[in-house]
Length: 157
Image (tube, rainbow, N blue to C red; front, side, top):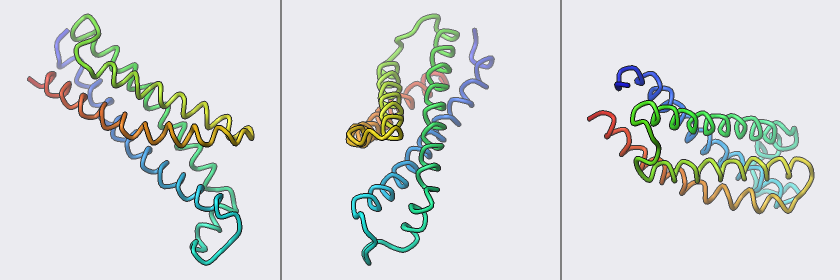
């Protein structure tokens, strides 16, 4: 198949990746706010009042959870787009290290999502796993973005 028939697929992939990165940074910000409010335990003067108001209403945790599911869905969409597009354009997978980078990011997102479910069920030990995996996920997103840029250049030439 030729590139023009897959152009719409690459547009969806570009938007999905951009939104995934945006959601990741929103999740990092809201996660840090929740961690600050949780670790300090009681209200003190070092934490602004607006953080306490948001955390006490449980709005922030629900928003964090919702954005996390959206990001996980987008990453799975990217996996399917990558597989379909690569098979359609080349006929086989494994064109570059982008496949391994993408699969790594998908695995990290799934572990993060699973640990988030465990936290929500009350297993506090999963919080350390969730935070650690999401720190590693930052580097995974950098890796998949860099290798993805090479893929974009390959399709455009």
